[in-house]
Image 1: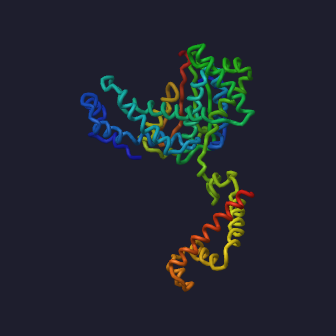
Image 2: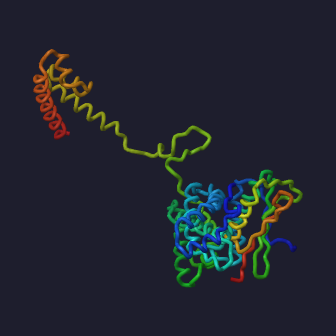
Image 3: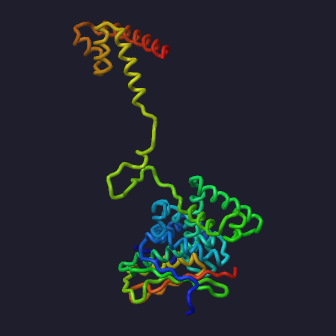
Amino acid sequence: MRNPAQHPPFDAERLLREYARTGNPAIRDKVVEAHLYIASIIAKRFSGRGVEYDDLYQVASLSLFKAIERYDPERGVKFSSFATPTMVGEVKNYFRDRSRLIRLPRRGGELIRSVERAREALTAELGRQPNADELAERAGAEIDDVLEALEMRGAASPISLDALPMEDEENAPLSAFLGMEDQGYERFERGDMLKRAMDSLDERQREIIRMRFFENRGQREVAQAIGVSQMSISRAERQALSKLRDALSESEEKG
Amino acid sequence: MCDPLIQLIVPADQSMMLVIRLATAGALARAQLTVDAIDDLKMAVEEACTLMISQECPPTKIYLEFFRRERAMDIHVHGEPGAVCVCGMDAGELDVVCAILNALADAAEIDFADGRIRNILLTKDLSR
């Protein structure tokens, strides 16, 4: 993996001292670019747990900016040593936030909800995160069930509707398996109504409508095909459309 | 070194991760750790096991051992004794992985020698 920060003369600490003094964003960007390889490694290590590499890379990369703003060059810590835990922390928080957005099926969901409620209440009461024993006691559950619930909460991860159910088969994406309203009935009904409305026209009007709107031919072309003036076609078309409108609104009122 | 409090031996296969995570959660819960600390250590252990498994030539088994000290919990991750492994990861990436493990546990050491990872030690300070 390319690691530009490792090769001299790149000196992140010197650049960051300069950035702290001048606030020049070009210097900050240079440091960010030189450390994106860490974001890439972190994203690679944490991907495959229900979150895509690209999302994790984005979270880790953005946290580089935070790390730069918080970094104090005078403390003598290497920037990469300071930035990595910051980036890991952001990725961890991303996982936690995401897992709390998921709604699970009832059986597991109820336990998870009661564990989450207990966790929030105990955190407020104790002023710290509770341990598993305290959680189990408050949630009125066995400790093993609480541990499973916590694991289940982390295991629930959303996947894209564009994802293929099985990677090695030529399957349709998951979105193709979602139920939806069948448009066929409506199309059939409209087709039937139009057919009955067309019956209200005489043969010449039907021919004009067919050529104009089903074959998308211009008025002049239709006039030539039938052997009349364009003006006659225009008038006949207007009358035919008016009849069709009446017939269709009558059908809709009946329906 | 004394006998481990818990020793788990599983095939070196990614499909074992749920077993590893649950066993880790169980072991750590009994050390009175907070749920967030347990979450972090589950990630660290998973990462350490993944590091072992994803070597160019991995061991066939993963040994996960929990040792309880007075104010700390040590977790060792290694392959079966005598396993011939080849890491295949460049030193820069290994440094970052070590930093990741350090960020998830209170301390982490990767025992790397002869081109292979011999042991990963994660330590959780229980005195805080």
